[in-house]
Amino acid sequence: MIKCYLDDKTLLVQFTTTELDHHVANYIRENVDDIIMRKNIKNIIFDFHNIKFMDSSGIGVIIGRYKKIANVHGNVMGININSRVVSIFNLSVLEKIIKVWKS
Image (cartoon, rainbow, N blue to C red; front, side, top):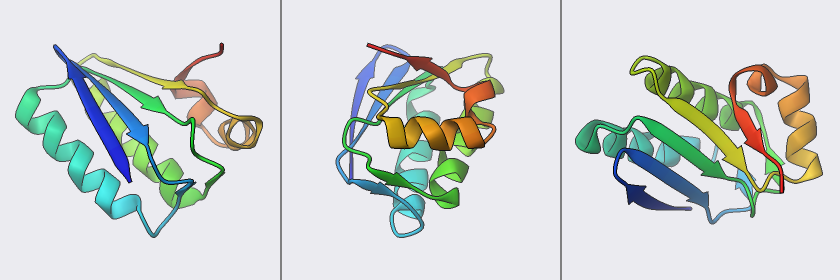
């Protein structure tokens, strides 16, 4: 469902699933939170390359990790976001809090 890569205090979370929804939200939340705690992560990059669908549970996963990282004055970024996910970012609060790198 995810692959995680570490570089110092930055965590790259690459979604291997095509849907970021209630079926995978807990798994992603628990695994990413575990890495954040164990490795003292300060920055997170979410790679949305494979994501075709995201519901409110997915939004909650991203916002929750943002709150954790904001508490340590870190940054959260999204990369490889397709037009479907961009529209979800635009309709939710995500566009205001998550930096998006557009290629």
